[in-house]
Amino acid sequence: MEWVFDTFVTMAWRFDDECTPRTEALLEKLARQPAIVPGHWSLEVANVLAIATKSRRMSSTKRTAFIRMFDAFSIHVDPKTHSLAWNDILHLADTCRLTSYDAAYLELAMHIGVPLATDDEALKKAAKTHGVALL
Image (cartoon, rainbow, N blue to C red; front, side):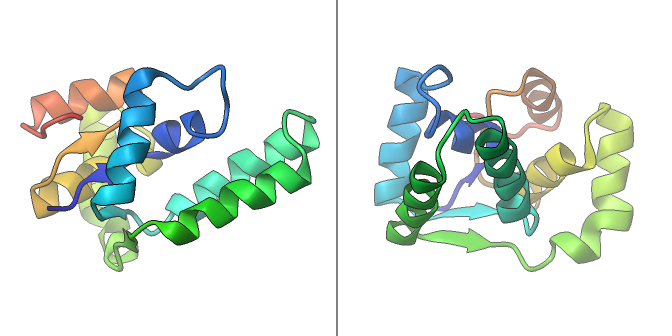
């Protein structure tokens, strides 16, 4: 069974001050079980990494090691994110008061019927409203 995780969870795997026992358990889950992310996930993660490197929160060496870590995991990228952006995702963003990025994670979890891993409070609330299980 697949599951969805967002950039909030992803970055907790890199930054010690954001890491929790729960996010560590999710990383262990990723090592055992495939996950799926919306099409924009890598760009969103790359943006956070670029800002973190620019602000000297991480070195380029650590950034490269973090990116390479994902080669060991089975992360599928949803090819439908783009085609859903103007309708389903935008509608969720509007009705749930989410960014379109966060709405894409919610839409994906809803569409394929899998749990969502996030630490974003607004996204958690929207997931609960729409009957999406949270990890």
